[in-house]
Image (tube, rainbow, N blue to C red):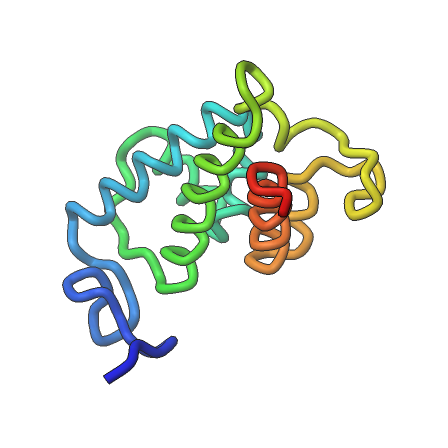
Length: 140
């Protein structure tokens, strides 16, 4: 048997494709809060990246969020963790946390910040930025 896109991590998503386990919710919320703090995201940017309502983001930021995460939000959370890790690996020092928020004059960004590409294009934008960061690490 081979894995497919419909395979779900055991114990993470319920039959409605939501993460309802309190420990999973707490871990995801904490990771998202820490990434938002490291990147100095505005609340609306953080909410947009995770695709949650502003009120939900405020609860995540306050450490009081306990509602289920949808499968798409879990995917975004995973992408954001991967992006955070890739950025730190690609750029040493302060650039390892600030690159995502800096305007990029490269042909694929047109002067926009990588975070703007991610906000505008959702998961596809996150994957684009992730691939860019990986290409910096492994240019071959």
